[in-house]
Length: 346
Image (cartoon, rainbow, N blue to C red; front, side, top):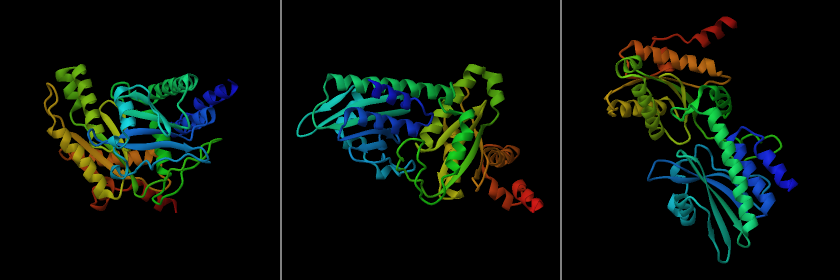
């Protein structure tokens, strides 16, 4: 019992979701001694979803394995490649397989946007006590995930909220363009997850004339527009892009792309999707977007200011467009204040 209590205390001791998944598989390996324990997440577009390994531990592993956060969907197994895992996902209750080997799958779903399955490979089928242990640990895991969601997500749209931005910005910005091992969590085995190639980009998205929507149609319709826009963002961007609502009609995206052209293409795709969507009563809205690449030793406020300046330029020049801060500087439309300050400093 003391071992179980220790693991539960460790499970709820971190506010990092990656570490939480690592702690979950580590706790179940120590408690049940399976041949393998893993947690998989269903990610990707509806109808083309794949399995991403969040954390996997074999009996003799010294550290958990996980798929890279920016793994290409085509490199990951499809949902139907593991029928029992998919069956667990669809029926939302535990599934066991008995034969030359035993395996059990447990659904782990906190909200419609995060669906996971816990998988245990064992020498023999799990008995009633083991099943109760897994179910109890998963209930605590889900409850703690709910607490994290409550503190980190916008209540209306379900996107990440403003107060989580700075911490995630610094974490993502620290991942360089070359593949490097992610830093180990304190007092936990190192999670073997590689940082991908490419550059991080920050975009600020603003709904054009949103005040008019609230004034003409009322705040309930305005809230519906915000909710529908958040859904369009989820369906347009990739599963590993970080989407935020900063408040009001302002949204932020943190994403990794090879270059400015790729980032502009992704943001332009969102602009077109929004412009062609028919919102109830309001019919048509548009968005203006400014974006910038993250720089070495960048701060959240400095990167946000550059993207916001690009956004302001779009607003001042007809709205319903996408602009890159670096390109506006190169064209002479904006001054790069940070670089000017560097010149003055030295």
